[in-house]
Length: 257
Image: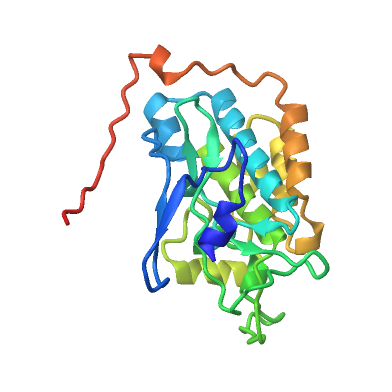
């Protein structure tokens, strides 16, 4: 499934699949991908002590990649949007990576067409509708729960939060069980109005991304439009090769035959 989805993606803000190898029994696949040694967006910004303008620029890059996925025919739901899956290229461009959970979306129903009914992802970035509870907070057991483009938008809001403030979603909750309970109570990942954010438009964007009703959240195109319109002074970012004072340590793991 990952190969089928990833192979069709062609966009500057999507990590490019350069090749693959299938074993003779067609039971396993190996992907050939670029090695982006600047790491993920959170690590990169910490290493270079990035400015708010740089952070907004990279968030906007990620929004471009997400808009591309969501406007394909059929659309693609990434299903695991988080800082660790947003990598930084040598051109200091953010690209979406890791399509292991990505799903094609039925354009009529808006639901993922090949969902198993078992939702996977990273709990802190998942939206409340993926954990159905009744009004008393008791867990419901629907036949199936579907990832949607709207659940990607909730996760994108969590990325904006973490990249701009350094706070993970639900920062005071230590384990996934506590986060799921917070989702059952329809608590937000953070209170946007209490955060030190670069503009009121970011507060509004987070509030909209975290609407409990999935259909009330903005589209990826709307998120991108807000960022492009309001962030009118995004910095021009030099290539890292032009900034020799910055050294980013990389770790590689080699596996012997």
